[in-house]
Amino acid sequence: MKFVYFPFFLFAFSVFSAQNSDKKYWAKDSLLSWTDFKDTPKKKRVAALSYCGIQFRNCDYKYGQTPKYKFISFFQRNLSWVWENTKLNYVLKHEQLHFDITELFARKMRKYFSESEIDIEDSKDIYKQIFDQYGIFQDQYDKDTQHGTLDKEQAKWQLEIEKQLLSLEKYAEDKCY
Image 1 (cartoon, one colour):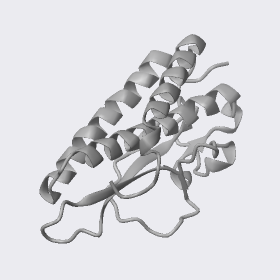
Image 2 (cartoon, rainbow, N blue to C red):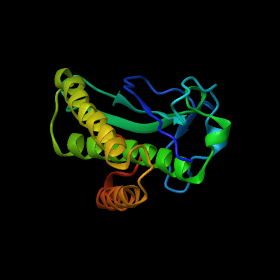
Image 3 (cartoon, rainbow, N blue to C red):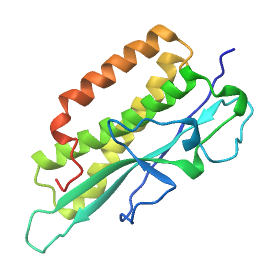
């Protein structure tokens, strides 16, 4: 039986803290597992909820210099959940791709900010514009795949996201841009 579920996307504008066990940072070789979903399920019509976001901060800004920024995609374990009876492989793959899309948009931000001289006053607005595109993209993914229940559409999205991540591999590094 297939279930409908809706992920939640966090707008995270924050200062980085030390590695937090409630946060899983995106890494190519570190996929989500059901043990990452630690919150108690909330909605009956929803199979799983992934709480993802992109942290954004200024790196060592000095007056008169072009600011540099850091963008990190994360999965919030203590706010993500799954019903026990919906721990199905296709559900996990769908949730993983939401996390991959989060990394894709972190890379898009890294690219944009590395190629442009953005003053500190405009940085939050530009971040928000790209983040808004991220939300629209995530919604389209759920719509096109019917929350992962359409296998062919899910496969198309999987290939497209892999292709886009590869095209932005230069911006995979977690550093200041």
